[in-house]
Amino acid sequence: MFEPVRTYGNLSEGVVNQIIQRINNGELKPGDRLPAERELAVALGVSRTVVRDALKTLVGLGVVNIRHGMGAFINIASDQGNVSRLASFLQINKGTVDELFQVRQILETQAVVWCTEHASGSDIDQLEEIIEKGKQVNSGNDANFAVLDAEFHLKICEASGNRVLMRLMLNLLDLLGENRARTLMVPGRQMQSVLDHANILEAIKNRDVNQAKGKMSYHLEGVHRAISGIEYSVDWDTENGES
Image (cartoon, rainbow, N blue to C red):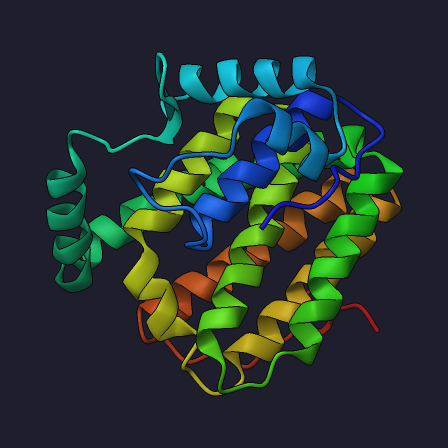
């Protein structure tokens, strides 16, 4: 399940990100017990001290619960029922979905600014890898693409250097889960998302903060339109008068 941490930055944050990604894609579920410190350290290619620091961060974020003498477990949120009810409510309440996308616009356009300013070479390589995997996913495989789509947005939050953003994004993606799945069934939406992600990454590579922010905003507007059932066909270059 785990693989060596690939980052030139904070190893502990790399461990945190990998565990959160495993939770997001369903490999780790609430109540699951994490491997022992020694096993995690070997699997992730880091020291036990790094693993301990990562677990402290995950506990602080409310992701992991340490049970003394038993180990570390993925937290079972006490308000899970409320989250599920809210997620169901969002399926029929367009106004609330609109409000969630307003929050995404604020959070993710700022996240991509920080990412553009601070992303390491390793961060950029990982974003590139996610995009390449997205290009190879069959258009009908919505589940696999949804995981890659979430990984792209979460990686930008991680590379921004703000750990709170990661937790907020996980919550937003969970709340919009079924709506996002429906969006990916819209013909051409998956390919459009891959193209949008590639445009965002190009701006990050160029360290062009304004372009990165604009392209992220455009991408989120497109996803929002698709969820709202609004047809659109204008690509980024045409929209912005670029050739």
